[in-house]
Length: 321
Image (tube, rainbow, N blue to C red; front, side):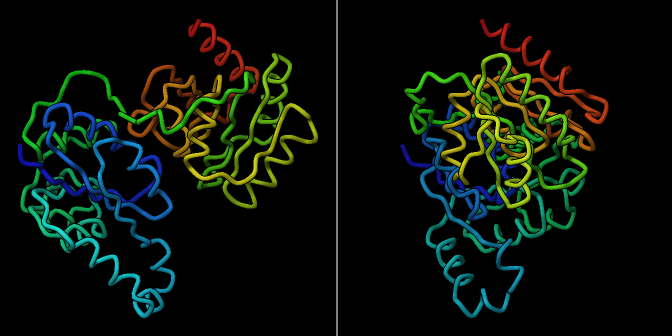
């Protein structure tokens, strides 16, 4: 049977990349001969390889290049990326991002370009770059929209089952240590998405009092300093070294539970069905919230106390057993 070669353009962000994985699972179940290549931002290039349907990852460094486009051109990085992108002809190209930048990337590749129709896409001008354009309602969760786009592009019926991320969990062996621990993701991209530092401290105290170790990953210096303040020399609250995404995934997979603000890492926890409480302030979890088993969304987190979060976590953990 002839292989069906499909190029995905979904460059960022972390949560958006993870949201695309269930669409690949659907496609592989319906079209066993499909193989995906994936254009993705270099900082997230680990993730597509977690899905067994992906055979090639093409990293793009647009976030870095746009800071100094001249240097990126003179170094040859952009031309090398374009050469890699154009190495083979694809049966189909799916722009799952729906932005002008992703549509332009798709336009440089060889193959029939598919994407959201003008009234469905995030940036309407992007639709002009596609040959096949599909109407997908905007007032749906991002995962549902991606699943529908792939089903329409590849001509199969969208399965009625809940999303399945399809991650090869053998890549992330569970730790042999028998620690009972939780992971707190307190860092996020915008200040208005951050929960009170004092409440994180109180939540850590609840977890420790109930026999859990608390691990605090971080991504930048501000998050590192906040981690150190939350830990405040408590032995059972531990600030981790800076970790790559695969190491964070392995950490999540063996955790008893996760508490997170609106960050892409919460979607990673959802992909592993780890009991997770996601705290939302300014974003709508109906459209971009975590999806999976054992997921709880708490909106308007300014009024939510640490004791409330801990009680929800206790309920989640008790329902697991």
